[in-house]
Amino acid sequence: MANAEQMTAPLLSICIATQNSASSLALLLENLVTANDLAFQVEVVVLDNASDDETGEVLESYRSRMTL
Image 1 (cartoon, rainbow, N blue to C red):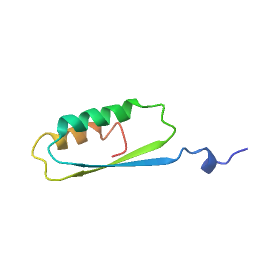
Image 2 (cartoon, rainbow, N blue to C red):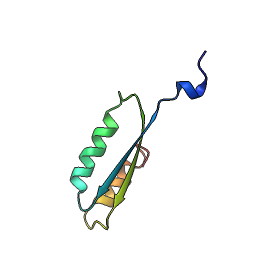
Image 3 (cartoon, one colour):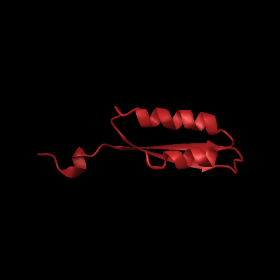
Image 4 (cartoon, rainbow, N blue to C red):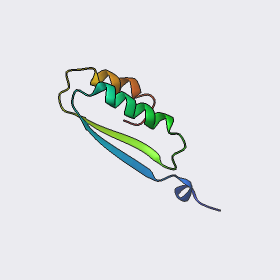
């Protein structure tokens, strides 16, 4: 019988650098959330370079739906 460590899906880290790209970021994050057939656990690391659009709000809206 496999132990818990062997049964855990591998972790995939996705790093995104962004500045003032709220609409593109929302589309990307939505696609990641709905891609539930991935064979990986997914974490997303976002580096926001002082955006003055809705990038922060987009990130906040996805915080409860994925690991950010």
